[in-house]
Image (tube, rainbow, N blue to C red; front, top):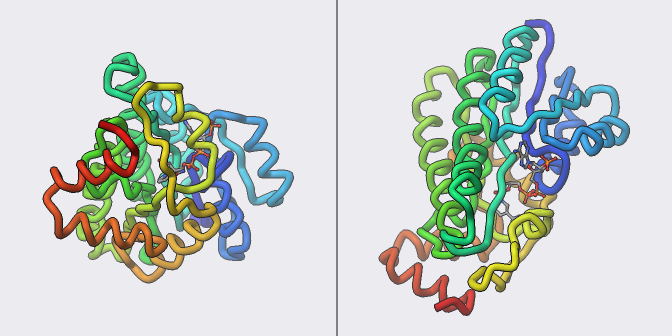
Length: 257
Ligand SMILES: NC(=O)c1ccc[n+]([C@@H]2O[C@H](COP(=O)([O-])OP(=O)(O)OC[C@H]3O[C@@H](n4cnc5c(N)ncnc54)[C@H](OP(=O)(O)O)[C@@H]3O)[C@@H](O)[C@H]2O)c1
C-alpha cells in the first residue's frame, strides 16, 4: 500500500465539499477520491483543490455502481485514511407523497451505500484511520413528515456507534455526525411542494463549521459529533423525554398537525 487516500461521497456540494476542502490541506494524503453523480461539479473540485482530487462519477443508490467503486478500491490497494460517507438526501413530505421507488431509493443511498462503502473500505484501513458517517439531528427521534429520512439517519447513528466499538481492536474510529439544519442544497431537493412539510429551519448553520467539528471529533475518537448549542439541546432533550413528547414538540415547532 504505497498510496494513502481519502474517499468522500456526496462531495460535489454542501457539506461534502467542505470535507474535501479540509482534506486537501492534509499533506499525508496522496489522493482524495470525490464521489457524486454530477461529473462536471466533481471536475470543478479538481480544478479548485488540485491534482490530488480524483473525480469519480457514481450513483451510490445503485448497487451495480457501488460495486464498480469497490472494484476500483480493490485494484488500487491504497491505504484508506478517511472514508466520509456523506451522500444523502431528504424529502420533506408525507409518506404518501413519495412513490415506493422514491422511498426505497432514499434507503438505498442513506443506508445501503453507507454500509456497503464501509465494508469495502475497512480491509484497506490501518490503525489511526477514520470512518465518518453523516447522520443528522433527525436521528434523535421519529420525525413525522420526514419519516423515512429520520429513520435512515437513526440507522446510521446506531450502526456507526456500534461499529466504532467493533473496530476498537483495529484502532479504527467510526463517528456518527449529527448536524441540525445546514445551509446546503438539501432543501432544493427536499422541498417538493408537499402540503405538510417542515418549514421552520431555526438554528441553521454553515457547512464549514460542521465539517471542522466532525474532523476534530473523529481524530479524538468520538463515536458521535454534535455541533452547536441548538442541536446539543435537542440531543439532551431526546434522552430525557418520551419519544411521543418529542414528536409533539416537533409538530408544534413545524406548525404541522
Ligand atoms: N442540510 C442539512 O440541513 C442537513 C442536516 C443534517 C444532515 N445532513 C446530511 O448531510 C449530508 C450532506 O448533505 P448536504 O446537506 O450537503 O446536501 P446537498 O448539498 O444536497 O449534498 C448532497 C450530496 O450528495 C450527492 N448525492 C446525492 N444523491 C447521490 C447519489 N445517488 N449518489 C451519489 N451522490 C449523491 C450530491 O451530489 P450529486 O447530486 O452530484 O450526486 C451532493 O454532493 C447528507 O447525508 C444529509 O442527509 C444535512
